[in-house]
Image 1: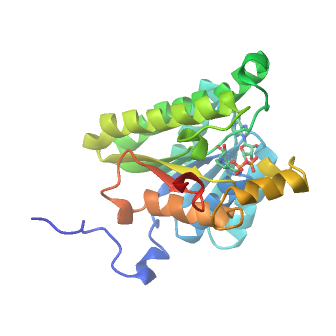
Image 2: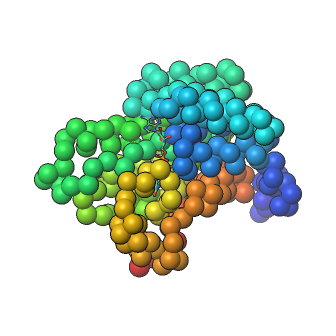
Amino acid sequence: MSTAPQNAPRSSEDITREFAGRTAFVTGGASGIGYAVSALLAARGAAVAVADLDGKAAEVLAERLTADGGTAIGLAVDVTDPESVRVAVDTTVQRLGPLRLAVNNAGVSGAVARLADYPLAEWRQVMAVNLDGVFHSLRCELPAMSEAGGGSVVNVASIMGTVATMGGSAYVAAKHGVVGLTKTAALEYAARGIRVNAVGPGFIDTPLLHTVDDEQRAALVALHPVGRLGTTQEVAETICFLLSDRASFVQGSHHLVDGGYTAR
Ligand code: NAI
């Protein structure tokens, strides 16, 4: 029986540069979870394309990562537009080399309203970014990784890809959809050496949550048995684990990072 893959890191020292020589594409990479993932990937040796609707913020982060000794470029991308994603992935490959790693993270929270009252335009926008965006990204990344001889993708879903919350029909439906896309892609591309997994963060302290007031925030904290919200670093660590060869037998999973939220 075979043991661990030969390219798996042997010690914690190896982990610090485990992505050396690999190109990574991160959508929504300029803020929150995407920011932390881009920074951790660059610190561990990946050449990172920070791709974001806010192209300026993506460039600023890329410059910071480069100044810190990493390799990074900033790209403007709108994941709702398939052509924009295609150009961004092509540019990444041209400037940084064959694509081996991708994190489909761009997302919006959307309105909170009962289903029958959910604003149609808002429904479309949440679906366009959170679900169509992942589809558009996978359609470009998977062929690029096939060409590179294999790779690893992490889609950022949510606890709302497993459970529901009242008033969040669009977000919940989109995130459940991301989990389904993840499983389908994992089945279809496993034989080409591509692993596709999802992470499901609980509530994480990012700009996405800056609209909630103190009372709402306390109510959110109370939903997490660990007694606090998560940090972007905690999610980034899990994403990097799933991207890495350390997770070589993890395929098609939705990996929850939620402080016990869904364990109730
Ligand atoms: P954030 O608001 O800090 O960052 C999201 C990034 O996505 C921003 O930089 C934004 O410019 C970018 N973006 C938005 N629309 C885009 C588009 N059309 N094309 C390209 N980029 C676009 O949000 P956060 O919290 O870091 O969220 C990242 C992901 O994590 C999202 O998919 C979100 O649904 C998910 N998530 C967040 C949780 C939280 O509590 N913050 C919990 C569970 C999942």
